[in-house]
Image (cartoon, rainbow, N blue to C red; front, side, top):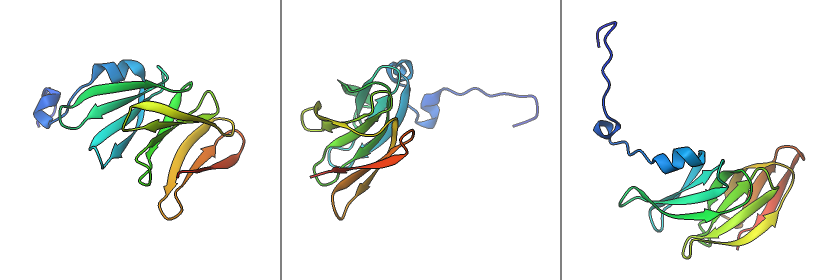
Length: 139
């Protein structure tokens, strides 16, 4: 590209798919489910988690969770997804089979990031303002 020239190309030319409904909801973080091959995205502004079909690149389900969801992780042991709810000091456990919240777990103040222990099936949650780490049984 020569200096001073700008070439705008549509996102589709690069294989990008734009999902405006996620931009409006404040899409934050995402996790991949290798079983159903779908992506799960936390929507910080709307208090939801969206499931995106990797086959059609469309939102196929949206689940209401707690206030300001942020971190998200896939649990290989159960097939569930866990999302931290930054504003409500909880973690939502979502069944990927039914697209429903199956548990809301109280944790420390301002939960942010998650990690999954494959060997012991625990979900670890950092609590930014506590400062603690919560341990959730993932089985």
